[in-house]
Amino acid sequence: MFGKVQEEPTVFAPGKRARMNVIPICLNIFLPWCVFTFVFALLSSKFHYHQPTICWTLSLAGFLPALICGYCAVAAKARDRDPMWYQFLTLAFFIAAGIGCIFGDLNYMMNMGPYFDVDNLNVYPSVNPAHEKGQQMMDAGRVYFADGTFLDGAKGMAFKNLDLYCVAPIVNGKAPMVSYDFWAVGMNCCSGVSSDFRCGEFNNPHARAGLRLMHPEQRPFYRLAVQQAEAAYNIKATHPIFFTWMQDPIGDVNKYAADGMKYGLLGASSYFGFNLLCVVGAVVGFSKIGRY
Image (cartoon, rainbow, N blue to C red; front, top):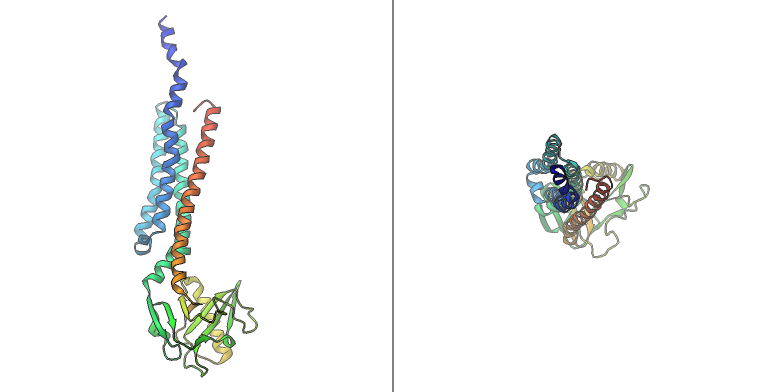
């Protein structure tokens, strides 16, 4: 008789466990998403620009919740409790931190890093490339050139290393210059054979400004293209600085920031949807094996 009384609660146990599992389900939906968002936002921020070591240390700390959940799963199993949700959350935290690191750093390199670089550099108005030297403007981020400045496509050149690195001097007036230090650049926008520079806003009659090249890995190849131009046209480039030729540098600078924010929101919403699908799949799978 006593044995029967002991067995009666088990009839209602499954329903009770199902109600209690709402909490771990919600935690599995929101907590990994919070980790992803935190890591992605941190690596995309200006803090990364000024304190990269501390930023990466904090970002890698995003893996700490995975370690904690892994320990909880082992402890739950040792106490003969079901560790299934702990195991799932461990994996979810690990994936969230890993993907957050990868895409956050990618967003920084492609968008936010160049934006912070240009924003921290100087702006130079009314620059005459025939009179100014590149060495005087090594901290230039945006340069607005004087009236009469144009691209000398006849002295364009390209260096090929898988991609074509195209350059053309920015000049003022028809007379030869002592040193050609200001160059418009672009990738895969010239033939590499004839002087047909077609990079940036080369065909915009109102373009008379330059946005500094912010991808340091490309500079050595543009420098080699300039050296080829020096040899081919018998000119001199003492301190070449590379720019994207355009009319409105401010618009392009702001576009870096806008793209960074756009990809941040897209990443956060996409990861939430991905994690939600994973949790739904886990709920369905656990229910089929009777561990819901």
